[in-house]
Amino acid sequence: MEQFLQQLINGLSLGSIYALVALGYTMVYGIIKLINFAHGDVYMIGAYTAFFVTTYLGMGFLPALLVCMIVCGILGVLIERIAYKPLRKAPRITALITAIGVSYVIEYTTQFFMGTTTRTYPAILPTTTWQLGPVSISYIQMVIFSVTIVLMILLTLIVQKTKIGRAMRAVSADENAAKLMGISVDNTISFTFLIGSALAGAAGMLVGLYYNAATPLMGMVPGLKAFVAAVFGGIGSIPGALVGGLFIGIAETLVVAYGSSLYRDAIVYAILILVLIIKPTGLFGKNEREKV
Amino acid sequence: MSLLEVKDLHVHYGVIEALKGVSITVEPGQIVTLIGSNGAGKTSLLQAISGIVKKTGGDILFKDASIYKASPRKIVQGGLVQVPEGRHVFPGLSVYENLMMGAYLRKDKKEIANDLKTVYERFPILEKRKNQDASTLSGGEQQMLAMGRALMARPELLLLDEPSMGLAPILVKEIFSIIQDIQQTGTTILLVEQNARMALSIADYAYVLETGRIALQGPAHELAESEDVQNAYLGGGK
Ligand SMILES: Nc1ncnc2c1ncn2[C@@H]1O[C@H](COP(=O)(O)OP(=O)(O)OP(=O)(O)O)[C@@H](O)[C@H]1O
Ligand SMILES: [Mg+2]
Image (cartoon, rainbow over all chains, first blue to last red; front, side):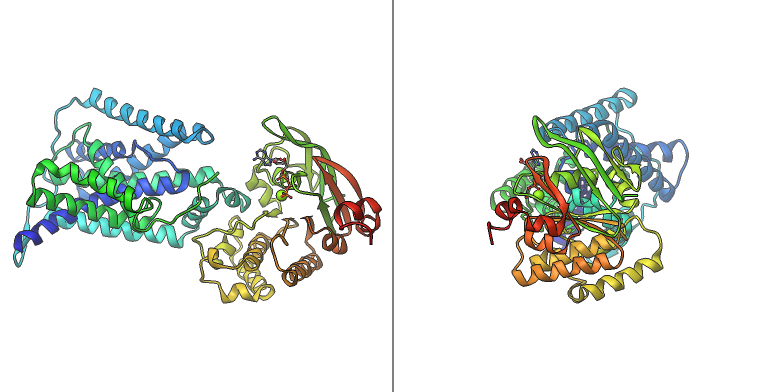
């Protein structure tokens, strides 16, 4: 039981990170129906940005987090403007293949400049560990929970209560009707990439600190898993991404703890296949009509 | 000066020519109706005016300035607002949020609040349903929401694309009397309809569109009496 609770805590930390990444997938899919395969690489850039600003500029946690979010937010907007926007009217498969291309470009550009060595971080957070009854929670885990919760609340407020958030939902729901309201669809899509990518940037920094490692290909597998999390929660649904991320994180951790670490990735793909067979629209997904 | 002048407008979808040189004029304060059968090009014309579909020739003047190349945003900002065919309210947004989307480009908070009150007075059902997801409304309620949403933009010219489509006769009557009310408050209206009888009965001027061309035009009461129109759009003879 103690072991189980401990694994649950570990799973929740990993799951929080998946959730932050899954949000970007789901928001972008919601608005332009594109699975942005470069999203995991934006997360990797977040980890490297954190490495740079903490190592060379000596930044503390919060300023570094802010910089990561801004850098990745801008990167996301650039990716959309340069790679996806010209393809908005092209068949969906064209954009999808482009997304995979963008992903490779980011991965190998990073590898070219940074090499394949694993980068580690200076100790910017205390190594305190709290003992809560039978389970222990590390400082970085607490940080992951707090940052995730704060970002979720901010995101919810933006999406639900602000004008631009309402515009995002309107464009996702009906692009032409949104145009008839005078909403600039281009700006709204850019804003969606900005927010989604900033969240990925935060996740990248958190995971970098958690495992004390950044590598050029670190975004590939977590990117896929976060994508599965988004599908599990119902792609296009923000609460779905949160629940999906936490679920995938816990499932993966428990499988490693009680099964074998050999199945760490397999379990996630098994979940994907099950979801696609049993309920392709995911947990919170609507049977929304396809956009023509 | 005319409020809207469409001159020799062409629209193509690939090789299909949906509008083959359409010219219409809308005078301020009037209700102008555009009737025509399925596929005549009515929606294409409104979508072209609103800047949603690409035009392939001609010109559009709104308040004497060309909006041929203007973005949908600029067009709405200028006071030309459309209620699209099939309502297109935003599912997932509440009735209140849908109405506020209509005021998206406005900054005058006080006036927006006033206009919201006016819309709720005109459509009391919307106030009752204000926190409900728009997709849960009935067809008639959605039509009212789409109209209320457009009014929140304070249009000078309101384009209505088949507002009576799919509604029970009693609701059709209600919608048409609301359209007249809207005209009374000083908003000019360009009304696309398949319900030619009703449309001609409230309009000042009318155009008949047939396969991408204006086939007939004239004061609405004259068109209502013309034999051609009676035969083609008013169910024949007397
Ligand atoms: N997006 C499109 N792509 C290709 N063809 C189109 C498109 N939209 C309309 N058309 C064609 O253009 C012509 C005019 O269509 P439009 O929708 O403007 O007619 P309408 O008068 O509004 O008809 P209805 O009364 O059925 O609404 C039709 O032949 C239609 O098939
Ligand atoms: Mg039509």
